[in-house]
Image (tube, rainbow, N blue to C red):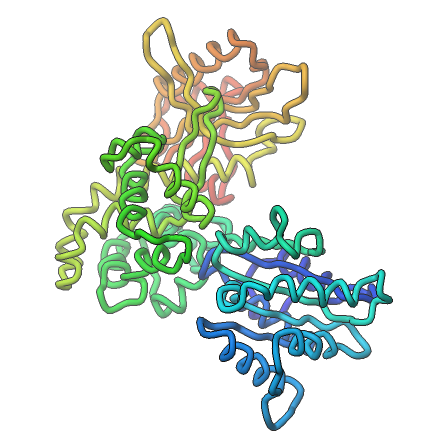
Length: 494
């Protein structure tokens, strides 16, 4: 089924949804759609229901009785009934719900499913029983293509897990993520790659922020970026101003917001390890296990393992706007609430470059290596792209490698390092940066890694000096990636 023109990007998501909704199997099919808030899940599902004449219902917070009544009213509107259906209970409602498709497959969507679960914890069990009654073993008596959706990742993650009633019933499990950074630039209409990186460091690839939160206001150029930050993100009259707070407050699993804000602030300040986070907020390491797990389950924190230090993990904030809020806005909240946006930004811009732009540029470089740059790294698949720390015993130091591209792991074979990379947003890179990568490669080779064809990559937002460019020209194992290359606007240099 062709994707509607109003849906930007999301090609593979639309393909997955349309194939599920139009499948020809003569029995009920069940799918789960999830993702962090503001990613466009509702827009996708509404568009799917409208395109196929399906039913869409968005639950709200409320009592069980009220939600049952609202569900009956929505079904009545869909069928053209002048009055709402007075269902006795949810089993009665779902029996009618499954009877809607007659002679063709039809999508039946229940959005914000966690609200239903909160009002009536038995809903998943009832839904499971109704699905089973209409499954293949009972003659496939329904063409319903049932989709449930939710933004509370901590709740949706349990719908199909463990001993959950609906485990094993889903034919589709779709996670709607932020737009990739190149698509995000296109979505915002930004053609200057430097401006695109700076914009992405604040709003990321979350589609809703462009129209719903800043009413289409976008920076016209790099020179307009500072003014744009002051008039939108730091402007107390815009919806984006409090969004960094609301993303945390909306998570049902978070009971003590103050602690969770402190954890996120520690990560935004550069404390990425378990011990570093605990020390920053004045807690013992054992006492932050629960908030770290909850933030990870909610999709606000991402845990990434160190490529070369077994058992060591780093945390980063998944949503750029939350990083910006914690690093820039939260410390200045009093003055921002008074409307002093320009003054605050004037004294916070340097902190933005060090605490936000630098780390975010590293993230984009890793995404480039994973999504767009794999042709640089020779044959064979990519096992993972992460960062890593290489111990240098001779100098009693360590080398931090920002972009590590590892090959697919095979038992009994040395792990292939396809690339080692260093990323600098605001520094012109030179031979010293390349020298550190060569030293890291040699140390890893001595430890048994396969490094014969390892590409040494320098990623820079400020460019490269002539000596490094000459070295890259002469050595095919050296890769230079600047911002235009990052956005596919020019060819990477060797």
